[in-house]
Image 1 (cartoon, one colour):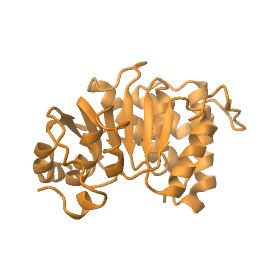
Image 2 (cartoon, rainbow, N blue to C red):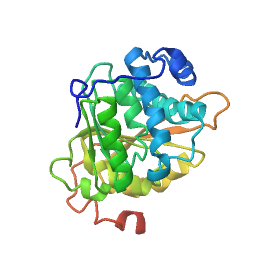
Image 3 (cartoon, rainbow, N blue to C red):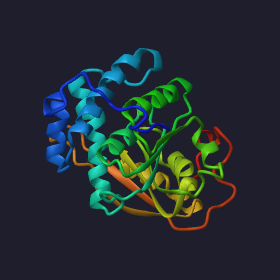
Image 4 (cartoon, rainbow, N blue to C red):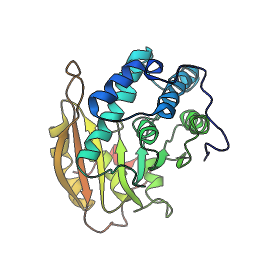
Length: 261
């Protein structure tokens, strides 16, 4: 974990809207304010992604404009959904777990835009976890930590199990698998939020047995507020309302190999 006092951000790029022009436009469209420090952090984040991408395999999206729109902008779109649903409040220290964030999406952009959140990045790939450690130190994100572990192992860790207000995940696994990864990490009444594409409702139907087994209830899906030229996505929301069954999550690899159904 790093603090901004220990490692102040000293950007070499512009710190105004010109530093991240596409993201600045997206944030304005979404009604999310980015101050000068946030814009500087996003510009530095974009540079670090480019620097580490080849060695850590972070993303196939490399053009600066697309990084800003697809990675940063879509993350802020999820933040907008969570705020509008009352699941994330301005200035509230919600505890969030981001499963399989890879290059840090969507959790790190949310933590930059809302510094009050306490973010845990759960990443099993060692090179990507190393990037995330470097990233949060460079950006000075005081309340962000990296857990280098599989989701199944994290869900059985007493320090993490049943402790998060929100679990978020982007393009990690199909919903029957993701539910088993995520719900053991949630406190009672905590919510899993997962952006999904064209098969969103099919995936939600396929996950019905897993949701029941893990003590969840489905909340109304919410459209992700993306630009008009982007393929539509829905944010699937599942709240944990029942007791945690000690059987779950099953051992590493089993949820993906044999999804509940």
